[in-house]
Image (cartoon, rainbow, N blue to C red; front, side, top):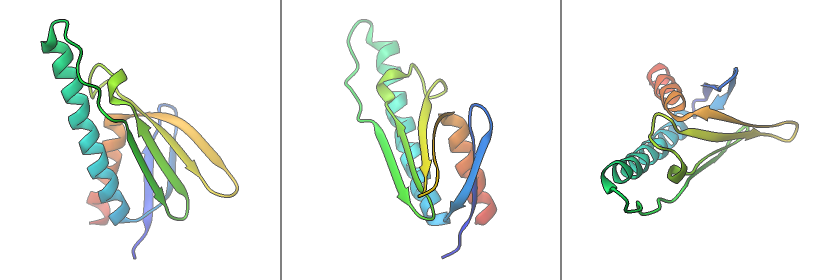
Length: 118
C-alpha cells in the first residue's frame, strides 16, 4: 500500500503526516457528505422563514494509520459550508494535536493530495 504525506492547512500553520490514497478517498467522501448536510441546513435556514431546519448528524471521521486522525464537524452550528470549520485531532503515542481548520480548505487539501498521488 502506497503512503504519501498529506498536508492539511490549519487556521495558523499546517501539519503533514503519512496518509494513504485509499484513506484520502474515504475522507474526501466524508467531507462531501458533510457539505451536503451543511447545504441542507443553510437552505432550510434561508428558505424556512421561521421553521427550524431538521438537525443533521455530525461528521466524525476516524482513521488509524501511522498516526490517528479524527475530523469532527457539527453541521447544525454553521450558517454555510463556506463558514464551517472542522476540529482536527492528530495523535500518536508521543504527541497529540487538536486544532481547527476551515472545511473548504481541508477539502481542497485532500483533493490536491489525491491529484498528486493519483
